Figure (cartoon, rainbow, N blue to C red):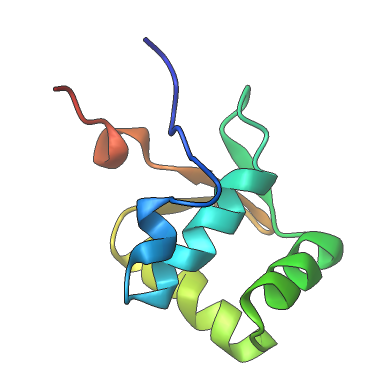
Length: 92
């Protein structure tokens, strides 16, 4: 099975977390191109995230940095990110 993440919108464990960085991850996954496993940090995507999170540019930048430091999000090139599928891969 090659699915990255299944997210139930109203009950996502990411949105239930007290760590708001995971809320950011939830919305990034919603914006991702799941075929290429890439998220473009375009102005429109970032504005949408900021709106969804009721946040600011600086807070979003801190969340992106935190996700990269934790090995969850990888920067492919300027403005283009992907999920580290090895970190997120969970076999039950």
